[in-house]
Picture 1 (cartoon, one colour):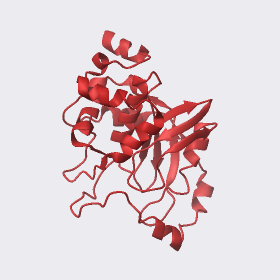
Picture 2 (cartoon, helix red, strand yellow; picture 1 turned 90 degrees about the vertical axis):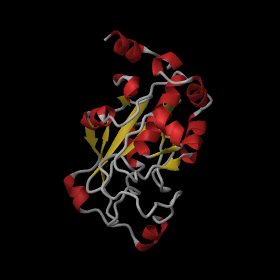
Picture 3 (cartoon, helix red, strand yellow; picture 1 turned 135 degrees about the horizontal axis):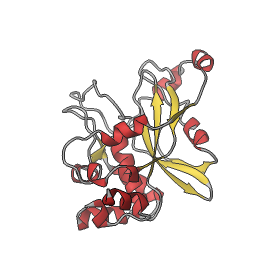
Picture 4 (cartoon, one colour; picture 1 turned 30 degrees about the vertical axis):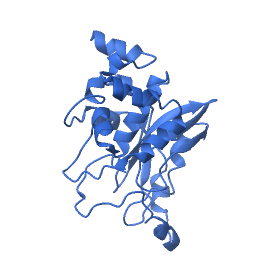
Length: 231
């Protein structure tokens, strides 16, 4: 209980608190702006999970140099925490589609986001959004499934990583879904009404062509049965 209290009230993440090695901590500490964090996350290969569902810790991400969205967002939020900013995640939930997780930051009272994704549409957001709803809606039109339907429906309140012990997301070896489950169970807010959802139009032919632009080519053996947080 004492450790959990210290974590919740820590303004800046130290190497001791996170349990990272000196080299791991130095890598994250060098990412001292959101833009640097985003460039680092972009440089990580995409985790296509060829062997099944993963929720890798920061240590595993740094070792393998690959991540999917929640893995990249967790690393990004931790890097912000090392700089003295709140380590906040935002969960974007969809219907008939994968969810997406981004790391939040604020500049001059406006929200921005750091995002790990293989496509071009759901990435970085500049800190120009007055509210989290505005930020979430900036992803709406480009959030689609394989049938070209717009699928984004809800967004969460900011989720503070300090709610979960760092041993479960910073240094853990093997899979643990505590963070994912806590994020999914947090309060979410609806973006559109049922009537609005029923009236949505599919993406047009030109948009469908643009959808094919990916940073990393998925391997033929990539799992298609993934469960959560894989944008």
